[in-house]
Length: 167
Image (spheres, rainbow, N blue to C red):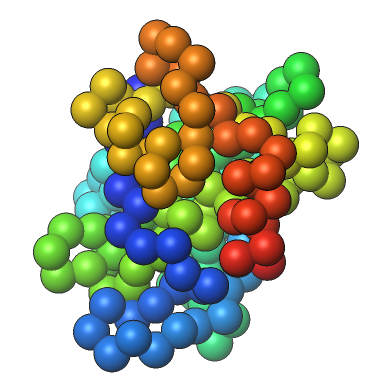
């Protein structure tokens, strides 16, 4: 699956789009109870139950420390040979479009993928498959490198920069 996520702003956390206030965040594993709310009926674009059910993948949610019941975004990660593969990433419905509430969600979750990679001994390296129209965007905002065929990678130095910014 080609990913199509917008890096609206690299922030130190998530930032209220209207006021500029930042919220401290946590990245936590998604639970079965969370899946009851993460549905297309509730505005989510992807089938997160499918991602959750894939035994080789781990699905994580981004929440604010002060409001851990509100999910701001999701990411699905898989440990592969010498890197972490990002299968899917999505901003919550409240953080999409011109009236989004918070900026920095996708950047935060991408940085978390780099952090998991670092913890696994992979130097922060992650990869993902990007839509062609967004390749240049990911190169500029994340420091990602296009490896060909839409496959993107964030290597050690840029991964460290993202980890340092968010964590």
